[in-house]
Image 1 (tube, one colour):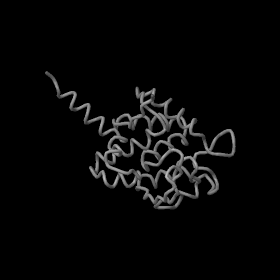
Image 2 (spheres, helix red, strand yellow):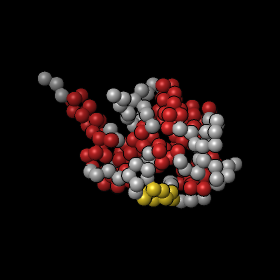
Image 3 (cartoon, helix red, strand yellow):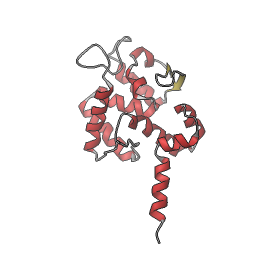
Length: 180
């Protein structure tokens, strides 16, 4: 079973941003968009430029839960959106494939993330890493599990804590402090 964890180290997040920006603006923006919105990759990949450009909020129907979500873009992400989409048309996919007139696939997104993760010595990476990284740092900064639970549309706080890796951090901490 592959375990997918959030990226806990802010330094590694910065390194990944730098590596991706050097390689591909699209791949860099995919990472930045994912860690700043907490959306599932299935919802990210189907977005078009018109869904995000010139907007303060994203309004979508989540694929997995079939529920409506309205999400505010932070100021940093608004700037990144403006820069990334300035040469694009509204009808363009936000993350276009270079091989066909469609967005990149989930498999391609995984390959992008996995490839750059290896360069910064991260192993427990998957497409959910973006969402989990958002959640982990949101919780660490705000300590508001109820709001994060609502953003993620989870049924209870324990599921959210487990999902973002806080539960594992707690277990690890207890084990570090335990000895006979």
